[in-house]
Image (cartoon, rainbow, N blue to C red; front, side, top):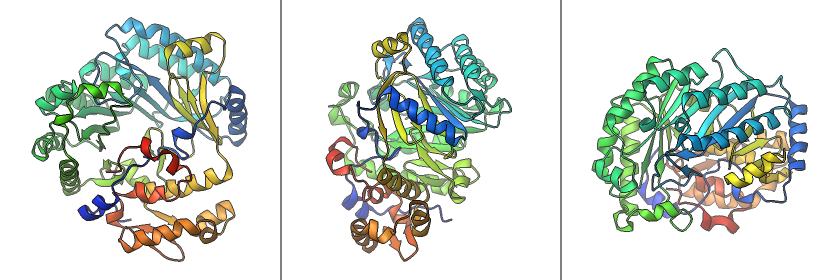
Length: 459
């Protein structure tokens, strides 16, 4: 498989519009409050009938400082004791959910996100992992994909050692940018020494994958300044990069209003930064996985993409497409059987549900046949940049060209722009179309027109 990418400025300018990131289809905007706890219980029963491994996501919402760019659901506090009531409720939810799923089903994937998971001290993390182990069938042979998001400012060598002992074997480090002026503008002061000490400790302790998170499009960033940050990180040779396009949506996220609008880089500068990033990482030997993600050729993501086994879920690209995903904690989203489920979004509602012994379901969606068909199409395109008509036809008992005749008409125009090629067998996304894969996927999105204004720009 050719895993390269081409930066075509003319095409990008013509196609750069708002659209989903497709961590799910339908997107989370389609979840509704008509979905009840009983609906979820029915989907769990269906999930158990089908069997297969599980994936667990835990949302730890606490941070001790606010990063102005952040659009995550978080609670800002410096008092670690504030986590105790939340953990008590989380433990009860783990027990509630754990007893509903067949305990023979192995947890192949586990992820702690936030917020800042390392806001918790070791005793709190140890209790959380033990509670999980008592209620779910965790792997004890280190063969699972157990990952955690790290803020190097809240982590030291001892923390990394403890995380490895708890069973984590993959780690992602939030960096965003090393430039002092940018850090001050976004209220995230983080030294290179802190960051690289954590990375070195993770390797020493035997973490199997290290990933660095960066953001382009932040205030005061330039091509030159971001190039310096990239130089420093390339020198320590991480396994993966997640380099996100900052979406400035201050009307939706209040903390983003604390940044100076005049300091935001122009669309042209953002594109120049992106072009530099792509060129530098490809020259350094990384593979473009898609959607801001890069990995070494021998990384599991790159291998899964070549083997046509890559998947995409609410945490991004994944190698575990066979797992049902259980979300735990406030605002977490799961995918169980034919449904998506989101938990309540605030501590008071979470506490009230748990005190009643109820699952803290806020919204959800049961996918219909058309949803599942379109999800399969979008997943294949966004993960593998190709689509076999025959595979979809056999799986869903349709004639692809008849079912998607309107969509194919639009795709012919993209073919003329050299974003993709089509023949009787399927669709193949060309190197110039890979950066615009969201645009290609949007053609198959039945819900898009009603929600387009709520999404960020694709580039």
